[in-house]
Image 1 (cartoon, helix red, strand yellow):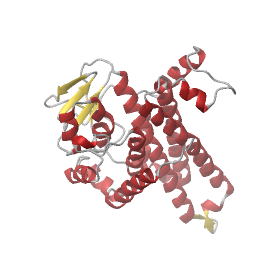
Image 2 (tube, helix red, strand yellow):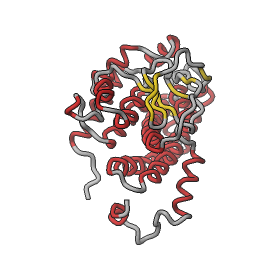
Image 3 (tube, one colour):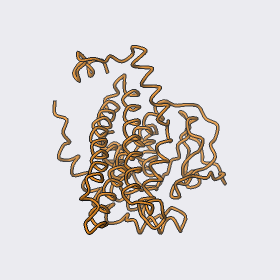
Image 4 (cartoon, one colour):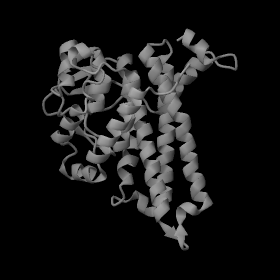
Length: 328
């Protein structure tokens, strides 16, 4: 079985990364922080790149791609610290809506906020055209009450009463995990670049073995988290029976990688790593926020433990990838 990305998937990743590297810079993040966190031009640019129509069938004006491609794009959104509600709207809500709504999302004419009892907030409710709550699509309320957040670029509002929808929870947790992976990758890059230029005792601090070991530990953590994410995306795309467990595994692995990357990057930067003047704080705060979104680490860990200890998921040397596919 070939687990490598296809050429089209690699081209998609590079196109999104190149665009965001040039258009969604740290200078843009600082401007958004001052101006309220949103810019219509950024939304239009993301729609222009085709993200809005990524999961929309070609017959409805979209690209007709799947959840693996959605996860690939979400990683890049996390790397660039994109705050526009494109992930919630295009990568989570789209497959749960009707054809007219999907076509509107592809055209950039519809923004969807997501509501679930697991979150004590709703993101971007003030700019949403509708709220996906449980299995219902509701009109967005007027004048929603804002909620404080550790991440200055996230716009959160008081929740509305709604039923739990496991489909929404799992899709959103998967996309959050992908964004955490992307953010962790970027924090590792920021720490590595700083270690190459910051000098102590006449040489870059990156030459010191202790710094190398810290950065290598983050790289290894990421290397082990990535395949867990892709396994979850593949399971979700195939609608495998054990998809929720794979998604919980991905959320735990991505959270661990992002939190370690944040902690290590702060240590490498020294005391200034906490300050507003260092770009790192944008990604660090996003990691803290996403770690608690759509089920925190403890919640997903409990779901994994219930499946393994309860016998719902086979483990052991005789359990292969092929046998897992046969059972979902």
